[in-house]
Image (cartoon, rainbow, N blue to C red):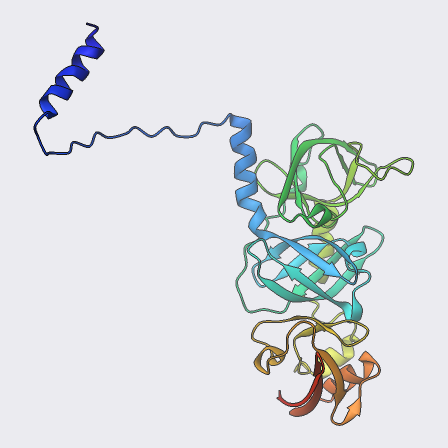
Length: 317
């Protein structure tokens, strides 16, 4: 009998006639990854909590939270169709926020969005521009075709004369505005375009990103902005902001989303409701509502439609 068989036989014999249950420890085998795989995993774990999905009008894209108080860096073309400079933002955890576009740079395809929240949020660190080199490993995280939290990898293929970064990491519609990262999980660029010859529309391994060098300057110049559409003298003269409902609406005044904890949330508005009137007058243009809010009212009567029902709801600001 082989030694292993003898040992098993002795153990079996010793348990015969005994009611004692013997539990032998089962060794656990830790997952093993190559150095390259572990780096990729680490980058994703570091950066993905701070990568968001942005919806503006009918379009969508991605963005990076760059400050814990809710400042988001993205592309100008991602937010260009935003109505009243408002966008909807969803985090990797599924939290939803209303964001306001506070600055844009069409030339470099950059935009800043400030989330309307008091939450402290995870952030992506911006890399030192001196550490950006052709040949380094890069990682892109975003929401291609609405698939949030998607990771692709590649190398930094080229740095153009204007500083734009070229990469072979797969970038597709929906990745726009998301981060191009280094192996430390730091943002080295903002993904913005792909080269797609012909009418195929597919990715052929040539994507472009605005470099962190340009993004740093843009952020420094605009991060203190609060309301992009208001003239500076208005902000200085009246530091108190007008009251907000906390809803995103379309052209027909149909509610698209409701900000948690907002006035709209408190009165029970929800997606699909339609704002029909304000203080007894029919709402025809969004400007009506904005102009009213700019008077800093203490209360209002909203006429709201839900399905076939209509209700008049008092709102206290």
